[in-house]
Length: 197
Image (cartoon, rainbow, N blue to C red):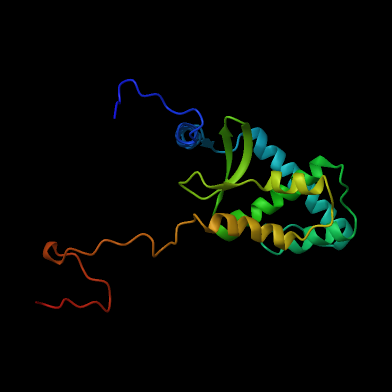
C-alpha cells in the first residue's frame, strides 16, 4: 500500500464528508465565540417602557385590565388578539406583544433581558443568567403576527419555556453544595449526623 503517491478517489464520499464535518465544527466554535450579550441600552429601555405603556393603555381601554408583568398578562394578550384589536400590519404593537411576553419570562423564570449580538446583527433577547441560552420574544411574535393574528399566546409562551428547559440549570440540585469541614469547626446543617467509621 503506497501512501506517498496515493490519490483519493474523487467518487469517494469520505473527503467531502470529512470536509463537511470540519466546517460544521468550525461553525459551532465560531458561533459560540461570536455571541456577545450585554444589558439593554437606555434607548432600548425607553422603547420598552413606551411599548408597555401602549399595551397597558389598550388593555385598560378595551377591557379595564392593565399589564401586570406576570403570567396573567397572557390572558390580556389573548383577548386583544381574539377581539381584533391587533392588526397584522402594526409592527410596533407586535413588538409590544413581544416585550410583554419577555417580561413574563423574566417575572416567572428569573431570566434577564439582554442585547444579543452575533454575526447576523443585534437583537433583544431574554436569556438564562450566566449563559448564552436565549429566546427572542420580539421575533417570536413579530414573525407570527405578520402572518396571522389567530394565535394562542399560552402555546407560544410554552414553546419558549420548552426550548430553554432543555438547557436551563436544574437549581438547586444541579449545583452541589460543599459539605462543611467539621475538622475546621464548620457546623453541620440541622438534622445531619456524623457517623464515625
